[in-house]
Image (cartoon, rainbow, N blue to C red; front, side, top):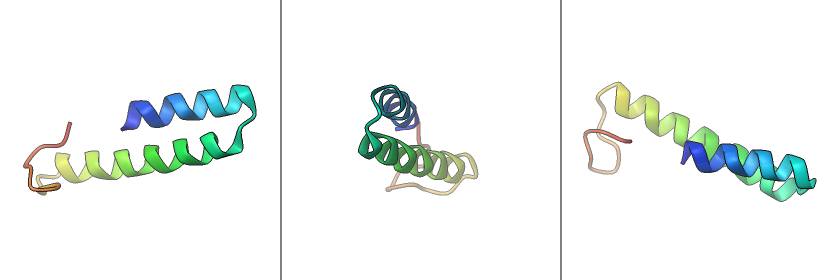
Length: 51
């Protein structure tokens, strides 16, 4: 999810599409939150680890 967010950010920036830029930011933030929760030992969506 983090990688997809970064890809959408880059594509949105290069093509000038603000909707891709916005979706990329949202995916990046959600991916980072899930990563931090998984690294802290909290179960994320029923899994002990989130990759």
